[in-house]
Length: 128
Image (cartoon, one colour):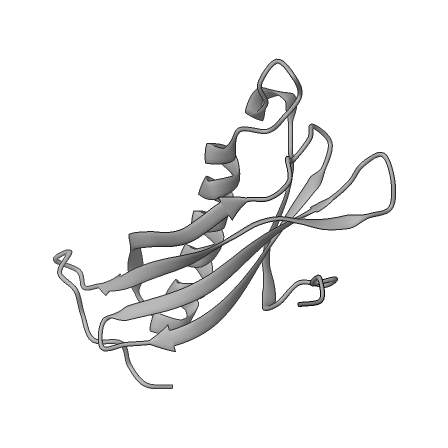
């Protein structure tokens, strides 16, 4: 299988990895990367559902490369399934390395978001 050389999906979020997000070795905490992926999933799913969404599950996520202080983290999202009340997204995190001109995939995962009504109950997603 050939190695993926460019992101899949729509660029949904970009942010800069800062020293406060790192361990003493300069590697960014995986939880911080995952939270950026969760934010991007929420943005994309809420746009599609046209209402508030919450994270129901995260599946099949593995960290392939570290993110370093100074890297720009770009999160790409692709809606893979729209159910009655849920949206499944494939989410990729890519690092633009600050020290050299390279874009590298650092992790990917599957996020499942659920549409919520004003009372906090799952609500049907309107077909677009």
